[in-house]
Image 1 (cartoon, helix red, strand yellow):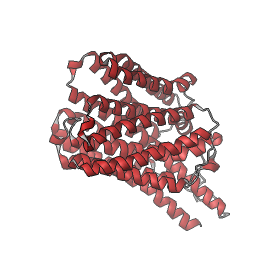
Image 2 (cartoon, one colour):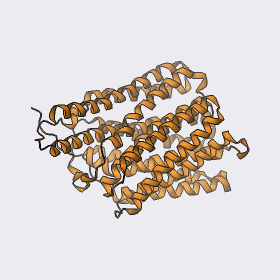
Image 3 (tube, one colour):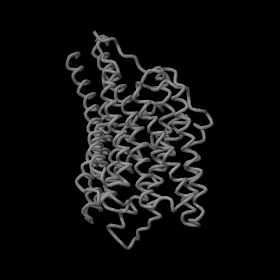
Image 4 (cartoon, one colour):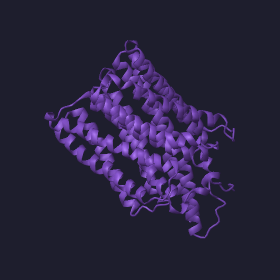
Length: 437
């Protein structure tokens, strides 16, 4: 007989009774690694000659499969789950809303990727519509919930500011897509850089930092983040992004001080996370900690790379810098951290919903699988090894194309392993219910 699983010790402050149906976040979480698989297959199909510059259609398609299809997909699901639990705000019609937004984000991402590859005006126009409705609708739903929230917790403030950054990212992205429909609108590299920066630094980094204030102490059994960092980080990042944006148009030569401040702010967050992990209260091996550590190291490396490139622009050609920075930030930072989150959040949600279902049926919960049984540590650790190897090979492949195919084959295996692990949690959930209810 399995011993009953215990929830994480920090959940006492959460409104677990407000948790939405499991189908709400899980549809986003299970879709995300499939986009990673698609991105790896696309790269293998296109080959190394189509992936040597950030301006090539293949690189644009690959990047959006990871940023929209993977990062945004998980982050949308996480916010559908976290806002009711963290803020205590009930999301009306959460399941129909999640279905609609998920479908629009899914369709919009695929249409955009297809449009990049085929230069189809119709596909670009359809992508604009789907993404405007999907991402814009998500922002509206979350903003309404946050407007009604009474909490002034640092995580809530970070989520509000991250949604603001997502709004900027969406507007800039739609403007850029509209260029493909009407070339008269003009396409400027400045807008692309701003779109990328608001998306990765304002939306992804600020949201992940805000979520980290909750999930790192809760799931990794660490001390709390320093209060000064929690209170100021999100505000500083958004403020420096606004200054950086203004300087891009007014005096591009003087954007570097704001960029320096952004690099230092995110490095401070990464170092603080690593310090908390080093002093965590439970010293047992934990694959989640390792995923986060890898992500934080990549975040520091991407900030250092930017500083070196700004200080000595000739040290690395612009096209190589862009590819290295993107790989470290998106795959090394974002995907690593989100993978670590998923290996704690999904087992906890499966445990929680199984517990609730059995309580509703009036049954004892003694036979519930533990969180470590829902996704076995050895399988999650295999994914970590594949992910780290793929990242290393990809960094080598940027400079040496001989490593291109091995890098993306391992990346394909990494995302495939993650998809299998997450689907395994769903299979165990359904199997447990069949035998218990």
